Image 1 (cartoon, rainbow, N blue to C red):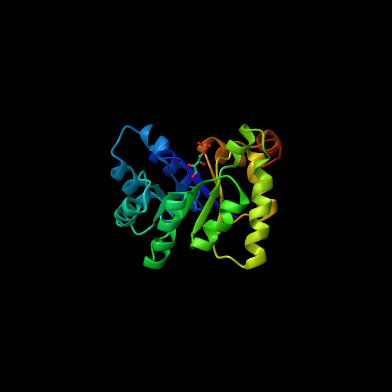
Image 2 (cartoon, helix red, strand yellow):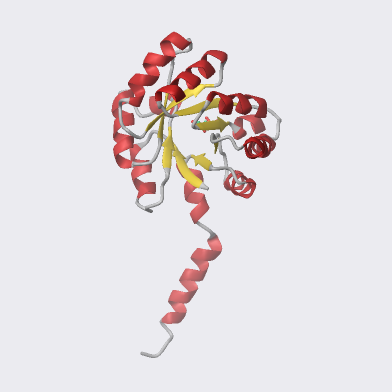
Length: 214
Ligand code: E4P
């Protein structure tokens, strides 16, 4: 499973990228607004720090507006993936982008049927928001199971990008199901590495090493 960071904070991305296996970044207008910088500047800098796919979200809604916006965003850097909301107009734009070779991440997906349509439109990625589904009293992870099964049934090329991840168990479940990608806040990314027993074990081994005669 590929690991993406869900943030627009370049400091966090640099930190995660130091590990050498950060696979990509997802952003959205809410995340970019927290940075108090120009949208395009943030996307360009993220694309330099992380060579993997970097999602930049469209803010227009109609097909005729989405297409020029998608083309403009795609030109910001070679690794930009254009994020388009899962609406009727959005799906039309996804189809047109696929025909033009513009990579897309279909966002705000909340059902397996929506994901089926995203795949039929030729989306590069689909982003089901599992945390927001959980918040609304549904089982977000069941939607991931359904989408992965449907995509396997019909050999769709669209990749399942598990989004709105809130905690490490979400990542574990997504990996067990076989989702292609998980995108997560830096806090969750960090928690995946740390374990109190690892820290305790390292300290103990260090202490005992000191007792070995030289
Ligand atoms: C994904 O691409 C979105 O940016 C993100 O995962 C949304 O997460 P949230 O529900 O925590 O805002």
